[in-house]
Length: 105
Image (cartoon, rainbow, N blue to C red; front, side):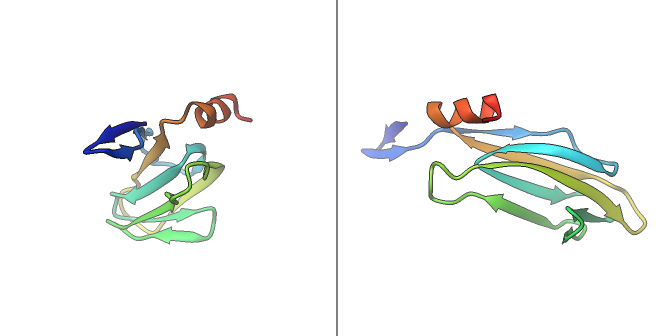
């Protein structure tokens, strides 16, 4: 944690995962995640959430520093067009939390 203008600010990082262009599963571990559909087909996450072309959805990002996502997501694509899902995972710089994320605890 650092201070800017006397206020505590939490440092973090954003990891951009490899874009998904095919049906499959992938693991997300962090404090929050943003899925952005930059293709022209519709993205379907976990056979439930749909993301239209140029749309996005996010999970996590609560005000709690211990809120964490560790989940496998299934992605598929629906309809004609280009398949491309971009994924950004955010992690707060917290040594104790990072230990659990890195160790898959």
